Amino acid sequence: MDYSVGVEYALHSLFYMIDLNQSQTIGIKSLSKLHGISESYLSKIFTRLKKSGLVISIPGVNGGYKLSKSASEISFWDVIEAIEGSNYMFKCNEMRTRNILNSEEENSLNHYKCDCIIKSVMIESENKMRESLKEKTLQWLYDNTYNKFSDEKKKNIKIWINKNTNN
Image (cartoon, one colour):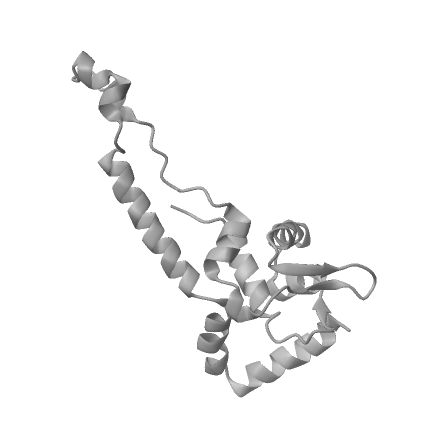
């Protein structure tokens, strides 16, 4: 089970957008330089975040991106779903219906009206993981990260934001 690196890029980028005021935006170029990642790849990620309603895009020379709602309203799951989609990781192929040891009666479609127990367990597990990810928000990330930064790093973040945001 792997999420693409796009999820990590998105979460790290959104983290730096939490303290922007209503008139500030930040561009892809600045964020890609900050993280040392491809501008074109980050642009694709932000297209997905925008399509999912997590960020707003402001066009123009002084344009860029900003969060569409408060950091406490954007969960880790929201970001994952925007980047990866909402499909379940486990795909049941109904192998039980093709088992050569089954009787003809067991192989009939009517015999397998109930879900496969393997599928049920896997979906249940994934749902628990999703619920956990829905409980963790960008604000939670900020609250549990920012205060652990040194005063120097906090100062450097503010300087970087002031230099790289558009008003």
